[in-house]
Amino acid sequence: MTIKEAQQTVDEWINSVGIRYYNEMTNTAILTEEVGEVASLMARIYGEQSFKTKEAEINGKANLADEMADVLFVLICLANQTGIDLTEAIKNNLEKKTKRDAARHANNKKLK
Image (cartoon, rainbow, N blue to C red; front, side):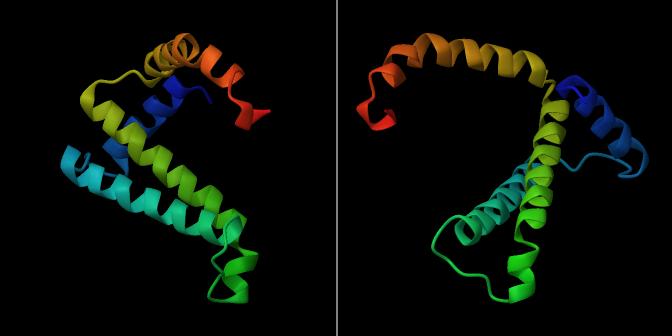
């Protein structure tokens, strides 16, 4: 699925199953909540925090994938609501990063 197809699919889902988009501020709050859930799992899977139960640990990576998908879903909702073409946005962002960071990263001794 391309980013454009994902934007179309989410829009179709929202307008049928979801009835309508939450407003932009609500979706921003939901996005923040979902990013927090990703951060919590990252701290437990890759960081120093431990899971509360063995079952949570066993399901950790599957839950991480689901939480990342939640982040992407809400981000796509916000893009759709604000008229952002994420395909164009990521292309432009990568161009900006390439111009700005090519020499910086190549000369960063910490990355070698």
